[in-house]
Amino acid sequence: MKLLEIKSEIEKPPRPWFQLFRLSVDRGAAKEWFGCEPFVEFVDGLGNADIWAMEFECGLRVGCEFLHLETGGTIRASEPNASHVQRHLRHWQAKMEPYPVGTFTDLDKATIQHFADRHPELLERHSYQLWRMGDDGNEMAIGERTSFLDARCWQHDLESRKHKQIYWISKCAISEG
Image (cartoon, one colour):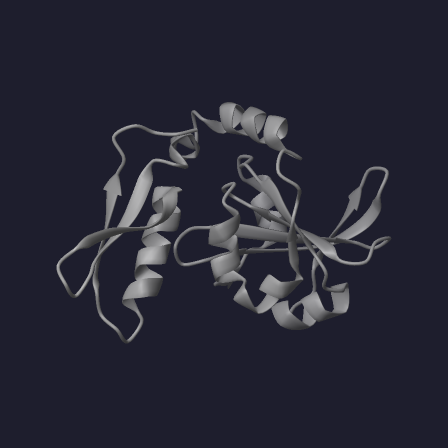
């Protein structure tokens, strides 16, 4: 994981961010975990917010925002895939509360459409399947259809474990959603 310099990120072309979780961690604990000072931004109508962002080796970007007037924070990611974020933030998993299903459905759809030309992978967020070959030679799908970024990250995670299996990713014939 590498921390992103928020000031330089703001100067780059805009990229999508999807709001996925409320985080029951205070700003002090977040600052300690990140090991650096946050970028502080004024959010209209809400006051100052401490912001940290990171990019993982797989390419997933995650941002954490902690409003000064609230307890806890918000987790956003560069793709609308909660399970992918949870795999990377295992240390906070018990403190992450997903937003209720449907809370950001319309906003997510609009964001995906807006960024589809620059980030076509957002249109394929349920187009890949991770597979495993068992010791008995049987092929088994692992989890649900997901994005290529998530499937590749999950594959690397599983391959790094002691019990070696053969894992591969396939593109699904018909994309859902």
